[in-house]
Structure formats: C-alpha cells, structure tokens
Length: 432
Ligand code: C2E
Ligand code: MG
Ligand code: MG
Picture 1 (cartoon, helix red, strand yellow):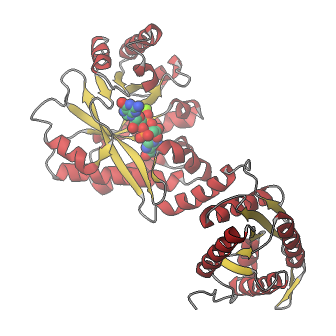
Picture 2 (picture 1 turned 180 degrees about the horizontal axis):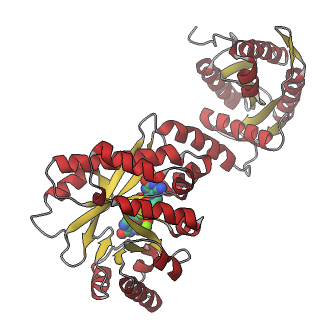
Picture 3 (picture 1 turned 30 degrees about the vertical axis):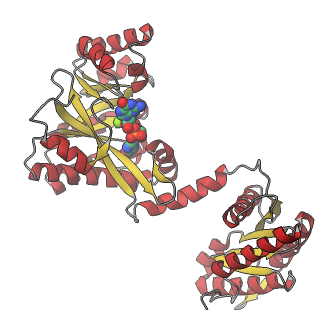
C-alpha cells in the first residue's frame, strides 16, 4: 500500500522514484535514454469545485485507466497527487516520447460519462529525457515540470519537450507563490530589528522591524525577493497584519522587562494604504497590546504619498491624531517632491542608502545629502541616514547636522533576543 496511490491504484511518488532510479542505472549501463512525461489536467480544479470531489475522484480514476492504455508493460504511469501524473518510458528517445504524449493528449480529451454527466477535459504534458536534460531524478522531474508549465502558458492541451532556454521564471514564480501562501501558517516569518541611533551620543533611540522569511529549502529569503510577489498576489495584507502584530507584541515584552521606551518603526506597503482600514487596524492593535502610540513609527515610501492624495492625506492625519509617528523611507529615490513634504504631516525623512554610500567619495552625493538635511530642517523635519557603514560616513553626517542614523556600523538587523541584549546594555556605554 505504501507504494500505491489509494484512489487510482497507480504507483505513487515513492515507487516512481524507485523505478526511475532503476531505469536510469540501466540506461547508463546500456547507453540508452529514458523519457519522463509530466502530465497535468487542464482546469481540473474547476470540475472539482463545481461538480464535487466525488465526481473529480471518479474522473481521475478513468484518466488513470486511459493513461495505462497508452503505454507498454515496462513503462510506469504514476500519480503524484492531485491531477498530476508522471510516466516513465525506459529505452525511449525524444521522438518515441512525443508519440506516447500525443496519444495521451488524445485519449484524455475523449468525453467522460460519470454519474450522468458528460465531461470533457484536456491535459498539458512536459517531457524530459535522461541523460540529455538531467543526470539526477529531481532535476529530470523538475525539467519536465517546467516544460509542462510552458505548455500550459502557451495554450494548454499540448505537449512540449524541455529546452534549456525555457523560461523557468513562471515555474519558479508558481512554486514561490505556493510556498509563500503556506509561510504564514507554517510560521516561517521572523522579525529582525535593526538599531537606530543618535549621531550625537551614539545611544539607541529605536529600531526598525524588518521581515525575514525562513524558507525550508531556500534558507533566508530577503524581503526584496518576496514583498513584490506578496503585493501582486494580495498576500501582503495578512503578512502586514502579522508584522504589525508581532512588532507590537515585542514592544509589550520590552516594556514588561522594564526597558526604556524606544521608537519602533515598521514599513508600510502601498497596498495597505489603498485597500485596508489602516487607521482602525493600528488603533485596535495598539490597544490590544497595550503599547503607547508614540512608540510606533510607520515608514512610508514616496510612492504611497503620490497615489490617491486626498485619501492618503486623510489617513495620515488620522494616524498622527492617534499619536503614531510617520517617516518617509528611501528618500531621494522617488519623486522627492518638495510639495508633499510641506503638505503631509510627516516627522522624519530617511535618506536612502545609495546617497549615503557615496558621500565620502562623490561630491555630488555629498552636496545632495547636505541639501536634503538643510531642507528637512527648514521644514521642521528630523533626518535619519540609512545604510551608514563607516565611521567616515557617520562623521560627515554628524557634521552636516543629521541627527539620527541606521546602518551596519551600529548594528545589523538581528533577532529580537539579540536586540534585547543590546537594549539592556544601552545605559552602560555608547554603541560604537
Ligand atoms: P528599508 O525599509 O529601506 O530597510 C532597510 C534595508 O537596508 C534593510 O534591508 C536593511 O537590512 C538594509 N540595511 C540596513 N543597514 C545597512 C547597511 O549599512 N548597509 C547595507 N548595504 N544595507 C543596510 P532588508 O531587511 O533586506 O529590507 C529591504 C526592504 O524590504 C526594506 O527596505 C523594506 O522596504 C522592505 N521590507 C522589510 N520588511 C518589511 C515589512 O515588514 N513590510 C514591508 N511592507 N516591507 C518590508
Ligand atoms: Mg524601512
Ligand atoms: Mg529604507
């Protein structure tokens, strides 16, 4: 039973791997090729959702029977789960594989009579060949999968042979999207905290909460690699809720440990601003965790300010009324409009790290940073420099009148435990 799929009685993933390994060993010995066919039904979910799982199951059973009709005795048709079937064809080259695949497409497309319904479904197939396309099982399957996605992308109901130049991005995007959806549930997100210090005396005045995704296979995934996808797919909503909740939970812990109050910044996504009742949410979360509103600062990007100005302005005023601080992140990389600096109720500008990196070598960047600081001060805004990595940069900024800084020189983003230790030592000595 451990080797067979209960629904279709076909070999399962385990037995497939075993047979594939045997086929590859034999092929290597005899200088033969093995073909792998990755078949996925087109729009099967629709049938399942509209007609019910029992009907969907019966359909899968008939599909399994029909696939078996297309192959020889030494071939293996397996079910991977869902509506995915992998077939191994030993001693078969590309031409032979294409022949079998087109036969499969034909038989799958024949109408099905199930519980009085006449159903039609098509399928998409990707093919990979050992040893041409891959030398190990995982890559061989992955390449057939990539080809299958490409077949779907280019119209479905077709088979495609894997090519090295095939765009793997669709495939990677899809697998990334699936695992991102599961990440919250599986508790794979973490917050790191990066210290923010006063350039006058080096003391910690706050920190920025930065999200991390601990992916089981990819390791730590940087926010730049998944926030855009989260925004595109709408998952940024629940993720942002998690970030805010987790940040405030941590603030509560620091307060309970008797540590002095600091200002904790969180990043806001443009989508949060457009779709959600941000103000209500922030207000209720602050009171839920019993955190004073002046401990929270929200970092906005210039693009947030440029979209739907009236609505944005109203929300910003609500947040300010609550006592939450507002800053502009990555200043200098967007529109950098003077008009909105005057118009929006903001307390702080964060100068983007790209300017900071070159202040000691590039006179233009140095001039730009000096100007931003002067301008900010004349508008009664405070200034924080981002990405400060060297003592020379800190010295330049201090001299130019910048009051706050954040960067590797003072501390990298770190887990809550490490930051708590830093906070406890805060009274003892300067942080750098
Ligand atoms: P950001 O808000 O501008 O955050 C600062 C980024 O600069 C962080 O990257 C930080 O690790 C990095 N950094 C800090 N000091 C230095 C330094 O001295 N040198 C260099 N080279 N880099 C430094 P990270 O953590 O990879 O975050 C990247 C961006 O992802 C953030 O940029 C922010 O826009 C976004 N992000 C992070 N967490 C969240 C979140 O919870 N929600 C949303 N919506 N966006 C987030
Ligand atoms: Mg930020
Ligand atoms: Mg920034």
